[in-house]
Picture 1 (spheres, rainbow, N blue to C red):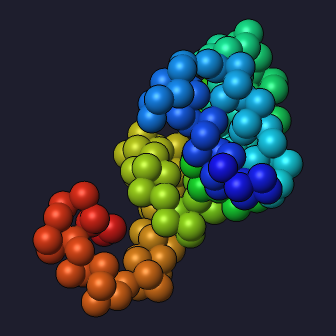
Picture 2 (tube, rainbow, N blue to C red):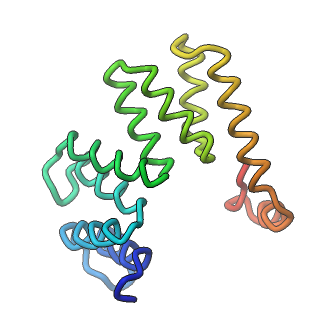
Picture 3 (cartoon, rainbow, N blue to C red):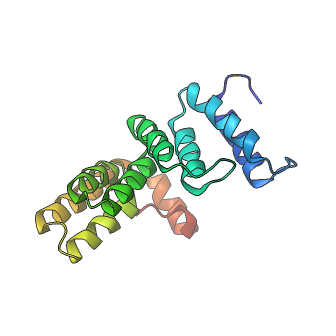
Length: 163
């Protein structure tokens, strides 16, 4: 593992979490590595820390700490964190705040956030305009990432489908 490579450190944390690639399952070690990766600027690591506190993996369940780490990840540009924050806001009855998080995530290409906005629209918690804006934002994202290489990969293997 490269000493200051946050992605390598993050991946090693995942190996400890899952007990993969010859690493023993060790949630405490995983959290330690994710903290280190996040301190080196890897926002995705904050999502894993948030999930650990959200689900009580290696730590006591602490929804406040989970939200804190999701916020740090969201500030760092992570769409999954935005989605998680939106679900928390929705559960708390803060639909407009949830929609704001979901729209940011959709602009970053998060499909589950688009589906969540669709559900809010279906239930009457979001307007047709909200849903239309989300669809347009997602379509713009797909247009930005479209490439011949992606289309070729998607045609060859369904796992590489990006639309």
